[in-house]
Amino acid sequence: MVKLNRIYTRTGDKGTTGLGTGERVAKFSLRVEAFGTVDEANSAIGLARLHTKDDTEMDAILGRIQNDLFDLGADLCTPETDKPLGWEPLRMTESQVTRLETEIDAMNARLKPLKSFTLPGGTAAATYLHLGRTVSRRAERRMCELAAQDGETVSPAALKYINRLSDLLFVLSRIANGNGANDVLWVPGATR
View (tube, rainbow, N blue to C red):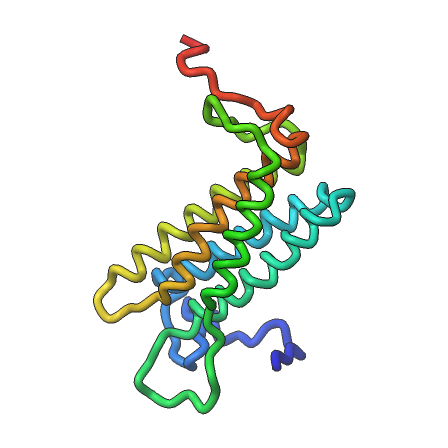
């Protein structure tokens, strides 16, 4: 159980932060960058939710995602280790990935196929969902970079989840744009 009774601890004043394992690392480490970008994506989704309250289904999906993103952050901030932790670290699961895939399929079934890429825009909700999508893609890039480092691991379920998340946010942006009716379509070369 998380207990936050002090907001500042002064332990990061010299540019380090603690991981879930207790290890201290530089605040600019790739692992911190990865879970920090996941946190940023969560904030962007929170902005989108300011505009999705009338769509209870979408808002519920986004609420579940926000909780999942805290799970993902916990997963990333607790690297796999051979040392006993004395507790079971929280890890992303395949069932979380499957839930996203099910939601993508259900939402996408409501939409007509696209004939062009969409530009971020239309409604406020759609625009913020696109922001969440792009930040999620950046988080994915950071996570993939971290996973490629010697001695570092990122769980396969975590990588799958962040990849599917950006897809779901794209589909939800189209739903927020009147089921695609208000999508802002890219017109190649239109401003030449």
